[in-house]
Image (cartoon, rainbow, N blue to C red; front, top):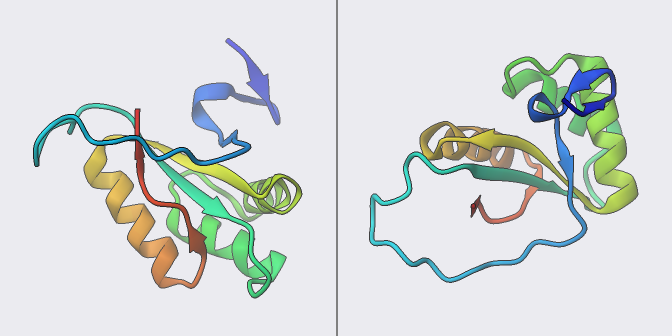
Length: 110
């Protein structure tokens, strides 16, 4: 299994270079078991510390140190996938991060 930041790759963020929105092919309620991605985008109004603390506060298994690592990826690449999983928890984490003021990409499925 691939290791990044000393953790198994599926358990950590994935860095992305751009967000591509694809048309939805299923109807409402479809795709509940597919992987959904929560993506935080870089912006000019959130501090590095706020991003790190917010990620640590709302994402399970993310410590403050890990939040700083993720915030660095967001800052250096423009965005980062911070959660991949089922739709319901993805929506929950997306709402929490958005509510805390982070700049979020639309939820992605796939």
